[in-house]
Length: 270
Ligand code: ATP
Figure 1 (cartoon, protein in one colour):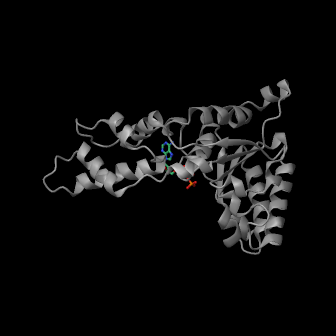
Figure 2 (figure 1 turned 60 degrees about the vertical axis):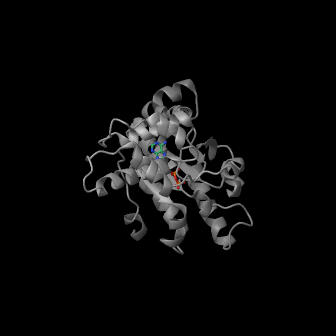
Figure 3 (figure 1 turned 180 degrees about the vertical axis):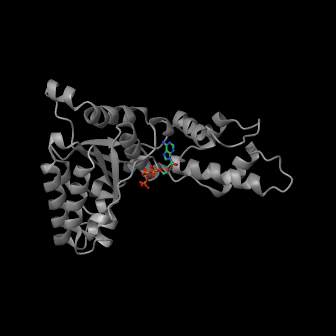
């Protein structure tokens, strides 16, 4: 029971519109998760088996957590988020039990989305972990729980990783994480959308050209852009005789400090 109490059920408030770009990923998640959770009858009538597990992969800060939360919000589902490393540290020696409890709690809170961030930490491919036998048992428990989730349980698992190359292939068999979706860094249009989202409540000066900023932020992830807009805001705030507005120069100044996290080598990796 101790582990059970530490598993928090959230009701997220992230909407599809809070996520810039990623239109195809959103559509895929709508069809794979939102529709089956909202209209299970229709799927049953059509004889379609919705996926139990979805693996999102891509560079850090591209919106994987945001997507998982939005799926839950838009499906009117509860949300349980667990980070892979936490399963090992927070529930040291009790990790398998923790996995069992997470699924138990999810079933009680159904419809529910379980989000395992940094899944590679608990389910690394062979040879990538120090404590392999313990890890194997955790993966086995996770797979057993996923096999045990039936269509009627209304529990969906989303996992995320930055390192798809080191995820245990056993996870990717049919009936487990059988949808694998790439979450790419934002392109020009997506960066424009993300800039709009994160400056929505900011007093922008008339010279601020978000299209121009989108062009200038090649290689910036959504997370980078969020930090950049905040930094620009802080710079404007620090100006003693400022106009109380954020202008283009603040963004440009902020870009000296906040650098893009995506490099060309990194993209080749995915
Ligand atoms: P990690 O792999 O490091 O866990 P992640 O892919 O899960 O990263 P998020 O946690 O979803 O990334 O993103 C971090 C923050 O960056 C979000 O809270 C959000 O403010 C911003 N962000 C990232 N992507 C987007 C996006 N597409 N649209 C709007 N904001 C975004």
